[in-house]
Length: 165
Image (tube, rainbow, N blue to C red; front, side):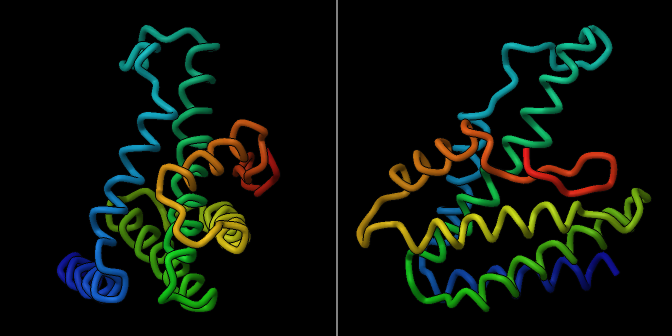
């Protein structure tokens, strides 16, 4: 099963790269930006010395803000660059979430990838893509997404329910 998933991801990523060109490096840059803008370096990295307040802040940054930023930015960026319809972007998002759920299942973490939350944040990215001026660079789009996140305009999963932040 692991080999099937690895081959599937390679195939999907290759197709994505063929259509957009620099997709792989763009996605790596999106991941880098998410870690840079929503970092936890000011908090203890080992959970045992964190206070309850520090633990809440750590989880808020990692589980909510960084994750939403990455989903919204990836969808806004790739959809705004042309070559993909909203339908294709939604299909890709569903496929990535399914692959994540299968991966979690294989690792013994249940068949869950916080799919509903991630797909709602993907939709925010698709809506933002329609507002992006042609020729905008990744930094400009990233700044728009950060503005949304900082205003709390994204979705989170709390107690098995997807809700606005």
